[in-house]
Image (tube, rainbow, N blue to C red):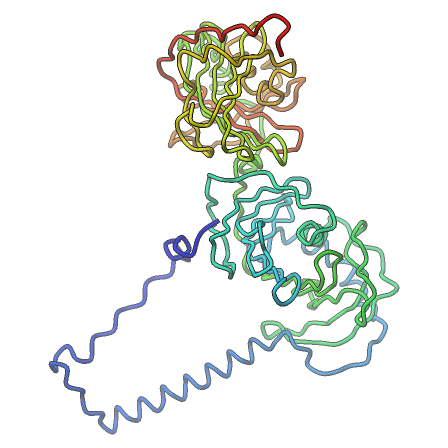
Length: 489
């Protein structure tokens, strides 16, 4: 999440910069020029235009207000059909700009950004006085949420940068029943691939104008199955601002844990969103491997064995309270990996891991033992500490699977059911992202055009992706970690 200084530096839309007006005193030595009659007339005209523009702006800001008070009535056939098609229209439109206001007063939280119902995914800036620890950038699917917290950000949210930052993202699990979980659920359920059944309880309660187009204000049950009905209120069901093409522009409701909620959609603001790496990156268009891609994949094991090893850095969101960062080495010659790992939730501790044919050993050490901070720790000490090692019967969980996959990449077999997901780039190098189906789940190789393995990705149980980036080079001799004492834990 950006601070106010970051927002100032962030590039905005690519509009040409305004021309700098000539300084009125540039040729007069600072003496004010005399306003002639012609110039006075021009100034009066400009002043009139400014007044008219301000009036137009006020009118534009008031377009959400109902045009007139009306008695609620049953829907016409056309209104029922448009309401039933509303979520399908969102689904077919793919994306929209979104602004959500949840709560009121000092508890108000605002979310600004975009929703992509085709993926589905949201990318939002979370702000407002009630944002609390969730202030920052948010990317989420219906099953996984990633937060890039920034408690120092300015209170008023702004649309996030289209190219998201690559650092400081972590898994976030909005507590069930809390405002964020309820709001995300509502936004995702605004789209579906099939019409809704008729809403017998729906009523038309008024009309309004949105961007010079008429809309109907309809009151109906919450969108889609599974959304908790709002608590009893004078207004009853949610209200939808729906135009004559079944496009939703505004929704007002009350959600448990969130209070009053307003969702405004900007149908014209619909850029293609870029998911961060932990959400799998851009979706691409999966296809079979070409002859050249198949050749690079088949030659990869021999190339890795000839290379000998690589320096590695890792990012592994394996659980909502376990977001790991690390660095170290893998050696295909000795079939061993040695890394230092930091957990963002435990900043004063580092874990040293040694993975080889005998299993996984680990040692917990103070953060000062490893250079670097918790977001990007340095490589583990050599030689390894003489004490504190213990066998890890869980083999370091999903982090161990990722390191083991890196070592197995130099072995035979397991590459028949491979497909190319997309082209991408890592560290400025063009790669093909190739996905393999394994017994442990999908595994992705990022292979550059020279045949080097640049990244490994493993999908974790929570639905996020862990990354292991590899930099070819000389690897130090990875001596075995001292054996834990007999019977030691």
